[in-house]
Image (cartoon, rainbow, N blue to C red; front, side, top):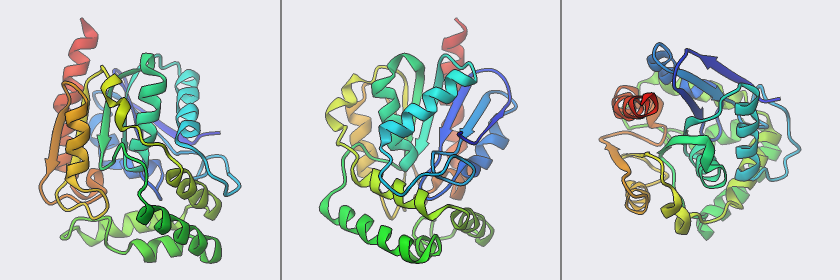
Length: 258
């Protein structure tokens, strides 16, 4: 079972959360857009509220298959699918493997490349910490790095409380899955639907140059680099994130209505 929220009516928009979070990361977007669109926010397998996992790698393709199954269950033939960080990796898998199910994609604070050796080592060490100490290890390891430098403390507290709810096995599976994900850079040219790429100039994990590279590879895509935004730009810079998302969704809505 995949936990999810399903709010509003109209154009379906499926939003996929970052690691180590859950569907509630999208609260600012659910609040902002569910009056006009159907906003579906799932929690990926293994994270709080969804079916448990055993700590072995869950691949980006497995996560994507779960989302397509949820779309089938909710009778959503096609949707705008968007993701941030881990959710962006899953979005790329879904868009490339199920192109007939997407009306458009949003790739936020994410990249198409595979892990380099430094990232692979970091993830291996993080799994060991999680298995020994639980989710507090992730909270302490991440510190303030996911956030814009001037992020309000209540937002940090909200996200950290979300992290602490995550099962250790789910964190281990997600980390191992990200470490094993393939490089999809060479396939970005296959994406023919509208694409919005969002980065943050203060993202401590994925630089804006990675977003620009995806933008250049996806014909007709739009690139927005949010000034001052951190890695979790949808929540630490929600007004700017929503300002980028609104015209993108409106254009797809108009096109779908023709």
